[in-house]
Length: 189
Image (cartoon, rainbow, N blue to C red; front, side):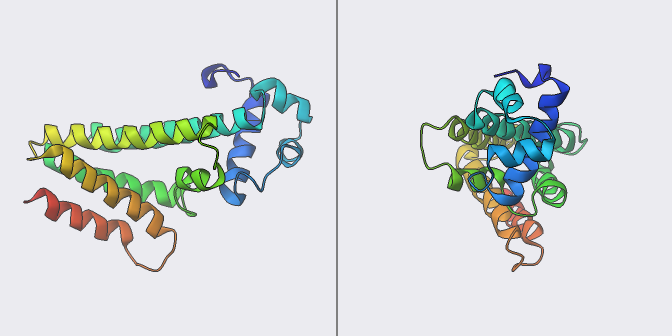
């Protein structure tokens, strides 16, 4: 399996096509044949570049995680607001992400439902992604001087994850904004 930094252009095309198909249709609903046909490459190219469909799934999830982290860093780390406000920027990043990348909900939650085997390499990527988010929230809470930062970060994590999933249903207008207001009240305690 190639490192994403050194993927050949054909592998990038396969990864882009697979990412779209996996997110739009579900991982199990998309076969290697469909990905190869849509990317206009022989199936062997997919296997040469990623080893297997599982390897492609792992790459897809890692790439998506990289894009999410880049957005968060752009929103939070480059801001010039007080540390306590930086935490709330996570909700702005989420709202932007949903608009750009996540109309069908969290790709990682969707993938988790599609990957019941705990040993699947994609499951580790999902765990790492969620752990990173929780750890990042803890760091932000500590930097802001929040009392009981660990517990507050866990609550913020639940709010962010819940908002991401709930927003895809379309039944609660302003889901992310509502979650942000709950987060603000939690931080003001």
